[in-house]
Length: 192
Image (cartoon, rainbow, N blue to C red; front, side, top):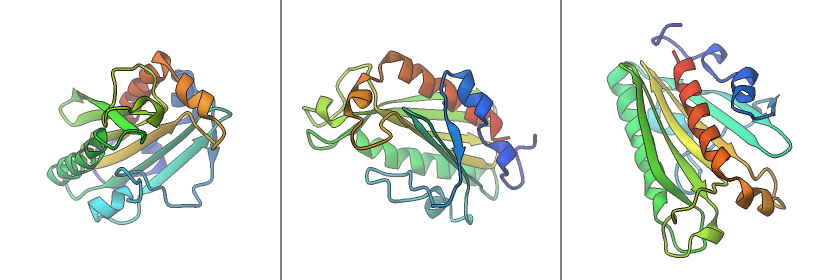
């Protein structure tokens, strides 16, 4: 696959990628614009990239939902800048008032010369008692910023698929962090 040119659905995660990290979810029609960026999650990737509507995919399962949105920047420099801007917006959510969800530490990997992946686990507000993420392994979801060549993507995963799933939110333990990390790597590699 080329790391230049437009993003297509071939550059996105597949059902096999989800199954490969132990997630069971079915593709959903992308009828709505996914808003994945920032503490309020009201911005889309293309709001920051200014490159036109993104390609997006969504999956839902009994206990998980996964969303991916990707755009093609004009060149690798612009793609790197967009990825940094998005990551900066997410990192601003690492400190929030006690009781609100927060992102944990940023984990970043350079997979190869043209490919990077950064992800942050989302910590349920019940664990946020000091205005920042405590050192817990339990995450309720997470967001990743991915770049390969001139392609940039945001990946969101949520183990709380409905308002009544608080137990599932809090119970997503150490395996959830591994799943978020591996899915982020897989998504970054597929972007090319």
